[in-house]
Length: 199
Image (cartoon, rainbow, N blue to C red; front, side, top):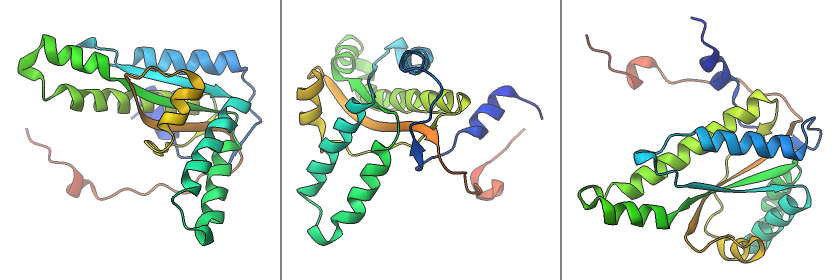
């Protein structure tokens, strides 16, 4: 079966070996990330997803913040491995910080009380879709990425440094850069375990 979209999502893989050999300009990468998030669907077309797009030294500064927050809680004897991992994320050309605007969520809860309990869940779903949309878009541009979740450790320091609105809640971080290594084989569980087909 030939399907351009399936080809695109098949290409998306986790890349931890990031470099700075990206051919696109910062403006081109920014536009790609913005358009992917813009086109990602959300419940009630709420468009609750937000992003901080960090390039170069700004991205490194973010991972320095994460590193220092981790230093406070990781045992000293284990910190070298943690530091190495964080440095691998900082080795790329940038990082996308994914947020959900809680003012949008609470506004929907007030306007549609019948669905109030669902809007936080739908917000998380919207965020996941936005993250995936960006990841696929980056992979189509031959830019490697991975998805990380160090929130809420750096939230306060990040908000202070980049002027992030108080209503924005950090949900994930996506370091990106050139693919400096290949990809291992992806394995799948048995279809009979995963799917029920009827009709």
